[in-house]
Image 1 (tube, rainbow, N blue to C red):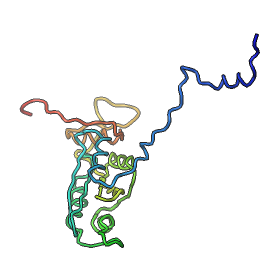
Image 2 (image 1 turned 30 degrees about the horizontal axis):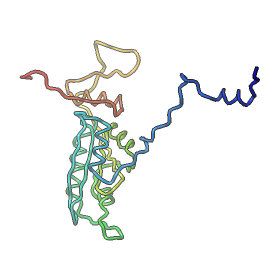
Image 3 (image 1 turned 120 degrees about the vertical axis):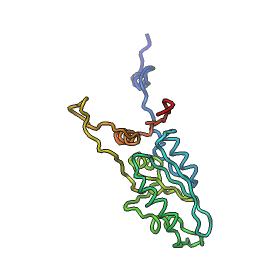
Amino acid sequence: MRIKKLSELKNRSKKPKENELQPIAESSSSDTELLKSVKDNLNAVKAELGDSADVVCREFAISVQEKFRLGLIYIDGLASEDSVQEFTMESIMHNHTKQLVHDDGAVNMFELIKNYSLAIGEIKEVTLLDDVILHVLSGDTALFIEGYQTCIIASTRGWGERAISEPQAQTVVRGPRDSFTETLRTNTALVRRRIKSPNLRMESQKIGKVT
């Protein structure tokens, strides 16, 4: 009879069992940095949010000495349409006459838009894709500028049509007491405010021929 050594028993005890779950390595997707291309950044955000009907994406161009491509993305119902149109897009497209240049002579479009064109109260700078998605799902507008890996987040949160009241038929003791209204975008925004996940998808379908 062969007597096993103590070292063999220790090594055997360290071997994982067949049905034993092994720790999963953490994903590095949360550290995904933005790219310099506006189109690539917009596609990356849309890929995370899916083909949802309430995701609004817009690309446009302005000119100082040459054409500059910009792109913005927000969620209809969570972001205020007036803030996006008047204080973001309109202010950028009309207030870019001030010229800032780098040491190499190139126009510093990022500083120009951030400091002289955006007529919005609160702005932030982010460089990670997950941070952009979180802000967009919170009602902010993400602005990308061609050639820069930093995104400008404009605070455009705003929603509401009719006041959201407590449901009369199905009341609950705990949790939120919000009820849906007649406006579709108010209802989708209400769901988005509770579930801030990029896995949530919104699809629009046409039912009926008259209404």
